[in-house]
Length: 271
Ligand SMILES: [Zn+2]
Image (cartoon, rainbow, N blue to C red; front, side):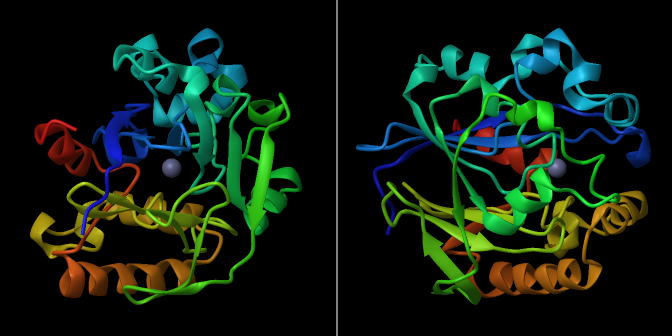
């Protein structure tokens, strides 16, 4: 059964990565209007600061290889304003992980509580040599109000350790899916038309988990392997998401942070 949450689907960084041969990808962000917890964001995109100084905010390698659109229309801040929503009403941010294209706008909402898996925060604050390029400490230089979680919880549509988030109703749940990063977590939202599952970077291209989208482009699959901290877990997550879509596709609509077709689908529905 659906809830009374109002869910907006935003694109907070259209990118045209060299690695995908110019295949456009997005940064799919949710802005959720709740009855008692203000506005909740799921992921944030690259942020308003990327516009002012993209190389400093995102790092030169990211800017040259992912080629993000840093114009004002891309930021969560400007898109919320365009929807008539007040940025200061953003009380909670749920990050699937802290890669620079997901955590880039934390500083645009400095009063929000940022909910994140404890392993992810540890990785971001004390990255290994291999992890250093994916996290940008400048993006949390303002000192966010972190709220961390461990992998404990209950079963939910075939997933383990699914849990509530402090200050939020049971219509918004965290679904730990490590593999892409140490503490990567999907976010489930019980919207007006049933459950949505924001899978973050648990997969990049819809074809990876849903054969209706055709075969996955080889370059995207390769990129996914290269950036994963644990490829075995990434493969296991793909399997579980395929099962979810096959067995519960009527009740749960899964989408990744970066597939443009999935975002376009929601936008075509007017959300
Ligand atoms: Zn990403």
